[in-house]
Length: 99
Image (cartoon, rainbow, N blue to C red; front, side, top):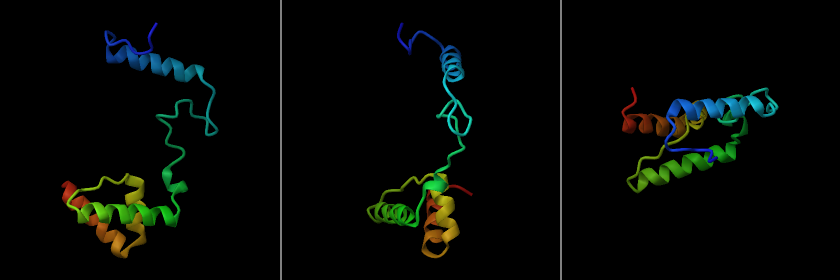
């Protein structure tokens, strides 16, 4: 039996995913489904070096006329750094129409 049957509706697919998560072993944090686990936020893994990379990549994309989409946890950390990074996040919110 295929895992994803296109004839099944969304409720049936979600029920199968929930059942599979209940059968699996818990993660270190106790959650059973890694897709819905928010215990390990990227904030913990974001070093200053990685934040510099996110900022540089976003500035590069803006420079060539594209609007970058940064993960919210990256935006929060950049905002907290202040200065140029805070201005970058403000500009991204303005471009995205976020109030």
